[in-house]
Length: 596
Image 1 (cartoon, helix red, strand yellow):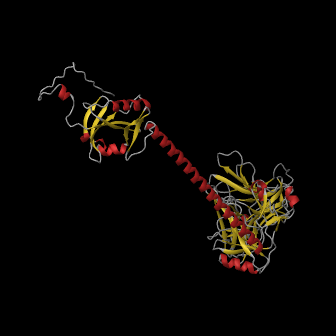
Image 2 (cartoon, one colour):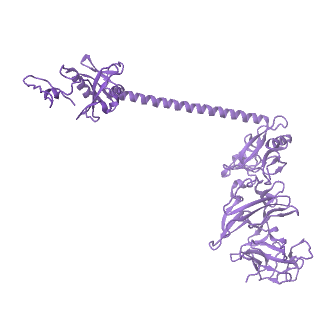
Image 3 (cartoon, rainbow, N blue to C red):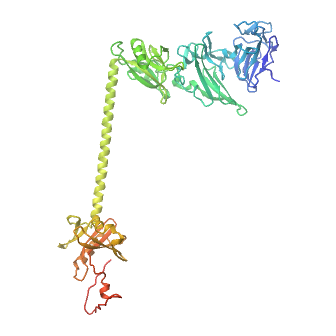
């Protein structure tokens, strides 16, 4: 049976452990790494996993043998003794309560607590208030403002030595909270300040499918914490002995080792102040100066050393026309100061009145409404984000504002000229396409009209005989024929043959016509058809139907005859059932002409 609590005056020596009710965590003595048993530490680690320590009580003062002893006193103080009963480590400053029934318990979250074993279960001390190098889910990284307690994590000195290392990760300062990784007192990397949704510079700690993060700011506490959404996933945020901020996960009953999900400060642009004052770090570790600034040390920048930063092209003239230029998609500079809940305009006005105020922004720092955040002094540690980032207004001189305005007008002019040029080119191109299309249609029509040399005369042209200048055969356009024949309606149809149909029609001048609409498919060429039409027209005879003209347009080929109301010649040659026959003898020559 696993034990998760320790009562006052119970023996707890090296070799005994407490195990959380969910059997995720274990509390007791351990030796880190491959260290010798000469150094023993009291701490918390994951139960039934390869040794992964998440908290150490006596990190700077190990027990030198296996005779360490833990005692919970009646007043609720927890003490670690060595073999000679010298105090190695203890909890201090606990409130004295006459009816206090203390109990030490290892909770399911990995938090070791001293609480009142009475009905209210009040917690008087907890290990989460004194983390070592690890942030677990539900651990509050930040401040207890009412007692001035800061919760931060600090790296081990090495993988075998849990004593205080060089690196720390904390939420500070309370006035304008930022998450900062330091080496000693030197800043290595930071996110912030908080913008109401995430810490400026990264969304990784606030937007993640594995956990839900919380940022709390009130008069009592200021902290960041995260809660796992999937209980089958173990997780920990660690600052390593090498100075990396790393997030690990382990899937229960699936994983065989810890999975390094992300190492936060591996991007070269995360290096604090990489581009110096007024420089912006872009992807691939390249730096650029803000517009209106130029490299302070051009030769160094040519050697890819950017820490010298940038200087202004035009010095500020406080009170003589200074203004602000808006920048989007940036990580906020370091050293912000919160003034009050001014509007954008009021914040800018207040900043202009202070000659040392170099920038301002309206930011929801404490999640209770936007506040006026300003930057006093030169701006450092900015980073560009292609997607996202913050909006900030940076102070510029009147001369620089004028230069920016002139450049903007020039860009607008160039853009307008470019647009006009492009539109003109498109119109010219469209005109050329239309003209070529028109020429093509005209040529096609000319070919269809059999290369006619005739001139237009109302609704038709002429086919001319090159060898008989006096002969012309009219060519009617399709619209004229369609109008005359009522769009070739069945009511106008008067005959059907192997080569097409015949329709009765009437021109606008009252002349009646018969239109033979030939089949669309023909193997005859244009010139051959032209010659045949001329021949037919020349062979006119008083006993033959007169050819008035033709219509050749697209796939249509039609012959226009005069209309004879006396029906087919067959009726007169062979007679009908109801009419006498007129017998023609072929002794008298007749020339009968037919064509197809």
